[in-house]
Amino acid sequence: MTSMRDAARADIALDATVTLVDEQTQQMFGTSFTVRNYTIDVNGDARASSDSVPMPSAATLTYDARYRDRLDEKARTVAADVVEHIRAYWKKRQP
View 1 (cartoon, rainbow, N blue to C red):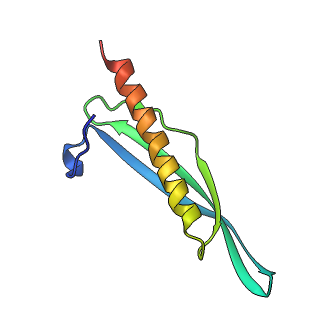
View 2: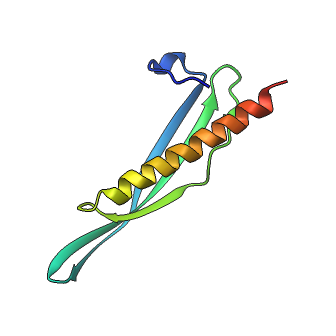
View 3: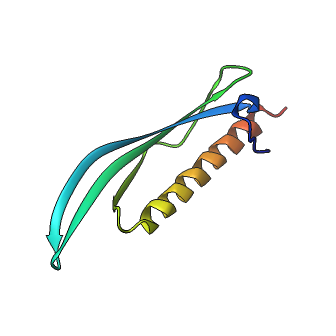
């Protein structure tokens, strides 16, 4: 599996949607925290065959914007899960 810099040449088109589900502001330890809940949904389509490529279930993310480490870690986790699903799809298609 190789990566593409030009999206038009890619075998699989991915579409990721991040949706804000909830936002709450709380006072803790004399500081305001704004905690946001998001869902991350990824869809994939094989361009040559128009097959829908199975992707992981929608992921959830809860974090305060000041603590970006949680966001970065979730992004890595979701990306790794997507890669595994693509590899499984290619493996099934191989004769």
